Each structure stands twice: as C-alpha cells, then as structure tokens.
Image (cartoon, rainbow, N blue to C red):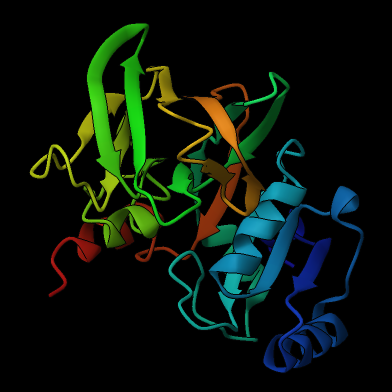
Length: 260
C-alpha cells in the first residue's frame, strides 16, 4: 500500500437510513472494513446533504475529516459515489475547513439556550402575522424595524442552501464573510440583506414577541417563542470536509453562481 494510502487504513463508514445508502455501506464495509469514528483517519458518509450535516454535527469537535459520497438526492456537499479506489481518493482529496455559527436564544420567559449551525441560523414567524425584527450589528442598531417572514445568517458553506433560495448571495468558501438575508421582506420591501464580516456579532430583537411569536432555528434545532437571538461565528471549532480533486467545495460554490 502506498505511503499516502496507509494514512487512511482505518475508515469509519456511516450511512443514512435510505436503502440505497445502506446497501452501499454494506459493500464498502466488506471491501474496506469499518472502525469506530474515534479510531478512524477519516469518516465516509453515505447519503445526501442532510446526512453530511448530521455527521458534521455528531463529530464537530473531533477534527476527523469527513468525506461524503452521494447516496441521497441533492448531494451538493457530497462527492460522486464510486466503490473503487476509496483510499486513493481520500489520499488525493482536498480538505476545506469550515466554522459553525454559535446561536444563543433568549426566550420570552428570560431563559437562554445555545446551538451550533453549519449552514445557517434563522428566525421565522410562528403565526399568520409577519414578524417584526430589530437588527443590531456589533452593538450598533442597523435596522429599526424589519417586517418579514424571517431572517437568516448563513456561512459560506451554507450560502448555497436556504440562503440562496431566499435570494441571498453565494459566498466563496474561504471568504471571511457571513450573509444576512431577509426571508420575504415586506418593509423595507427592497432590502435584500447585507454582507458581514465573519467576525461580526448579529443580534436580532423580536418586536411584540408575545403578539407576533418567532422561532429560531440552527440547522435542524428549533427554539420557539424567542425574544432575542445572538449569532456569531465560532472560529474555535474547525470542521474538515474532504472533496475529490477538481470538485472541491470552493469550485462547486463558484460554479453554482453561473448556473441558470
């Protein structure tokens, strides 16, 4: 075995519950073996983008690189599925380092909770009434009142997901930026959001929180009836995502901007 491939002698394989992913896992385990993630040089995740996000969350502080192969639907964060030469692909893969967002919510009753988000942290109206939000950036009031369905803060890795669907900008993976994007803004109607430094601290206050209830969501974790939400990047957490040469995340994000 070549020296570079020896580094990936121990591989952990995880898969979504989809039959196609489970069958692929069985074939790969029979061929390459399977160890516990804590003992692995790399984790191979089989599924779609949802499975990749779950795997990143589950191993957020491990610093173990994660290599996804698409056995799901969208698969933007995944590599193409092939069974041959897995260790060689791992040895030649390019690694992208991403940092999550740390979201702290304050409920209407004064209690607080925290969660981490890899794609985005967002606020959504809970009822038929639009949300009314006040936005502070680094302690300075930037918007007195935003009437909308919600607002989100997206990382570069998450800028091609919900953020893009909400007409937010796509960010290069290595850009020191965050996207602040409104969701169906009513007033000011033409405000399309802002690009922020990745060191910015965003605070969103909910106006009339009792009358116009708002939820906060960090990826898949939801917190209902919040009064205030603080969002900032946690640069102390490094997550490593591995991509095949020529199909790295920075190339995918650039190519996505030219799709029509």
